[in-house]
View 1: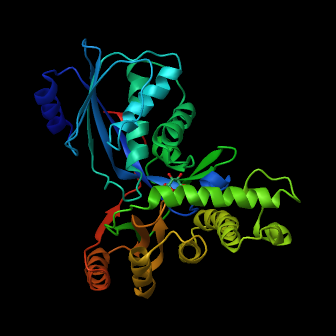
View 2 (view 1 turned 60 degrees about the horizontal axis):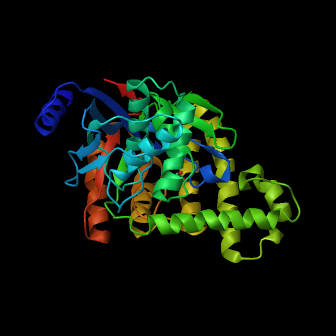
Length: 383
Ligand code: GLA
């Protein structure tokens, strides 16, 4: 991989003095639409990711190119940058913009990206490119910014430069991922612990609906606002910062304050999903995968009925999983509205599962799903 990319870099930029970096994508095992509500999430990094080759140039120009996209950019160095259009290079440009606010002046750079995370599939291809860029520039220019500050900086890029009001989970998972471990992250305090993802006889299957998520951004911001509304309603009686400051029991004492039926459904999902992550973390610790799987199905049902971020494609996959004897848990992962589902699949049944799921999905949806079996991968590194 590295050698091939080096050749492409040389052809594009006529230079060999590059350094190569890698950052992963992520899946979220459980705890969906929880991060911006201050609760617990349980993501992990995956083997697929993004590579960056970079070298300084003396032309005072930022040159962005990618093996995956035709669009390249050449942007003269400036004190600040603006997002232009929807092109992929807005992500690394946003990172440079944020880093410059930290009193650093970028020099001319030749940058080449390549990623093998399916784009727009809910596996955080955008957080991967953000964290990769921040990690690489921090390392290359010895900026000495700690990892958590880089994560926060990348979240600001997503929120302020790109315009998606997302939480911190994706950037955190990409930056702090470790092989074979899940991250239990408290999105309020940002304290985290790494837990062995002891999947035993099971492996983690990722199933891409291949549905393009056109509504994801606008509906995502709408959900964020609905949760803010629920907090505002509840604050008439109790002093909370986030919905996840309440467990289900406490919530039931005050939820009469939420008058709008839709907002009540959203808040109910959040509070109960947060409780499920606590239970799932305990189940994983005890090696109780059956219970973990049950919680995954419950999470999906809640995202489908209460939070309404699933859809026919994701539901078809999860329904198939529930009817397939060698899967013990499945759910959508990430923002939803398409993207990917995950399933805990008994080892040895990979081919059989893929064959039967593919047929069922095609018959129902009319195009194919893609199925991968993923290892839980490592965080960002210089190669
Ligand atoms: C997207 C966002 C995350 C998180 C998930 C839903 O991936 O970027 O911050 O909110 O959706 O859990």
